[in-house]
Length: 120
Length: 107
Image 1 (cartoon, one colour):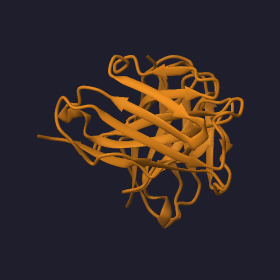
Image 2: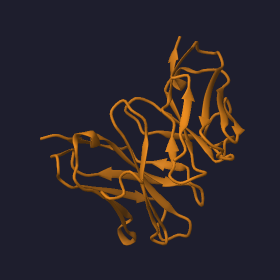
Image 3: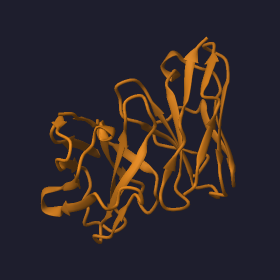
């Protein structure tokens, strides 16, 4: 059974750096073709893909946010970490991690999401 | 970046009736199109991938069709639990992009 769960601060101040952790089970990110992505959703708005990390440590980022994002993995802990620098109130959103289809780029399994509010 | 446009923004349908949701891509995405269902306070759930393949555990009343730029999600006989927001997502061309969603509400 595949499960993912996001964790991190619920509140960050403008200009701070956000660090989110996705802890998963039911698969290994060292297995070929496994990938995990981060997606966010501002309140009442649509979904936005942010970043992806692959089993072979390849990394991909949203063009509009790539200067602010870093994704990494700790295979031994079954965790994927996303950092986003210089947070702004417009970054207020629910942040999801998701395991992608094996060899395919749809989002198969999702975490429950974590709401991050950016406010002073 | 490929823009995904969903229509209508809101669809009002009575339980037991058929619902048809549309998704259009700004350029061809072949059949690399997924549909998700999202209920309030929940994460999205994968319904359809490959434009027409139901994900594991998805009822047969959900069906997807289309290829290229035009796609449709059909729910053949709406159940109370189907009223939600539906998103399409293309994964043919990086970066992945989602539509703005269609809210399916009870008429």
